[in-house]
Image (tube, rainbow, N blue to C red; front, top):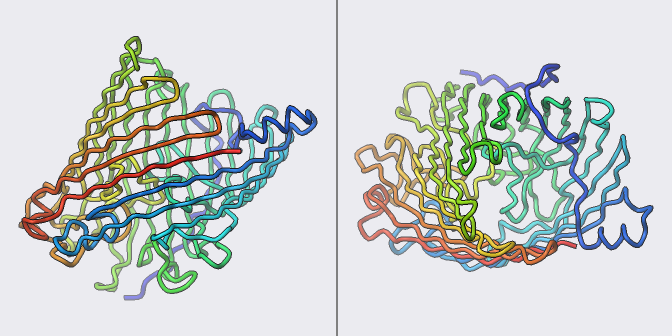
Length: 465
């Protein structure tokens, strides 16, 4: 049957809202080494924001994380040692009612060419409005989008290239709350050419949050739409890395509840739930299938605030639905949209929330000022063995024994992560981490009993000027 063309969702700004937030959604002026010196030397330069960021990372992946199809496979699992470098430089100017911000970014990955992107435009936007004087403001142009815990909308900062959008964003706010309305197109990384946004991939939404509606928590609600056309996969050439392979219209309705600091003494919590509907084109069936999927994310913890190093112990649960029947005319596999996948589902970035139950235990402590030491333990269980085992992003694993294997065990494995984050000064941050993945029944049933456990480690230094 003919496939209808998707129509981008045209978002309109609601005049009612349910949240509290700072007065402006424009990027705040960065406190960088150069800015501090510049403003001290030239007091009249206060409206200017000039700075740079240099980031270098070494990363070792052993037996997983290089090619999803060969992860853990005896004799085929790949390993890689890579160096990643990213340089950003920005200049901004802000008055009471209008402002602008431009940021360039260069990225290189030695031994990982997918991380390369010669100097390009990462952000360039105009801000209009003054929320202290008038409740409606706007941000127009190339910009990062980041909301909530970034599970659906994030800037993907761990990635060497990051993520930005060509977008129009409106905000309505007062002392009680705010609501954002935006429509955007994701920017595609195209090394050697100027990065352009995907003309066939519209991402729009309404997003609101509140610390006043229920004064003990930050309450956020959202409605998101991704309208991806048939030409989307080839917008800048055959196959855009990381883009869906077929057209789809996915709508996501969700809410995030997050306890306010000290609202419950030493206890804290967050809970997020989302439901997705719409349709996805299935090439094999030459038909549109109904999207019916959901996700649930829970986290809670206790901090010993009066103890040395203020340790925190937490429990969490991440779950994205899977598809239990590939022939019933429905797609029940949860869609990540444009979330930041690093950290919530394990630092090794081997597994995402799709078709997965992920119970976890987390521990963190701060033994000295600026230093955080942490350990996470995560367990991965397929939500439905009639669906695939999905990596952090991209298509499900297939080949080398991977595929839809309903007769196999559902226990995928577990991961332990150890890491340290040290803010040496306001201008320097150092990180180091190690992860080990223990293969479980599902992987061993798929690729053989001699499936390889995986290791990963990294060191990273970030300097701001």
